[in-house]
Length: 65
Image (cartoon, rainbow, N blue to C red; front, side, top):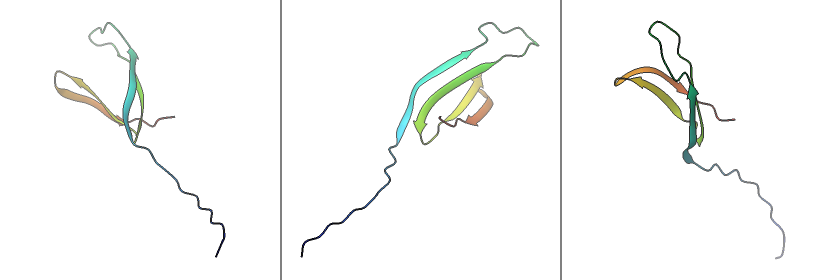
């Protein structure tokens, strides 16, 4: 028999963090606030961790746009 069949599938492509960018305070002064902006794209969303002398300062799951 002849006929036609249509199907829709969702494809999720996994890929590692790509082209990370880091912007923020270049010179840090003791007691002053330091701002750091790090962004990247990946699937699944990347987990970004900031270290100071091997100690974790912050960890966040970055949600790609």
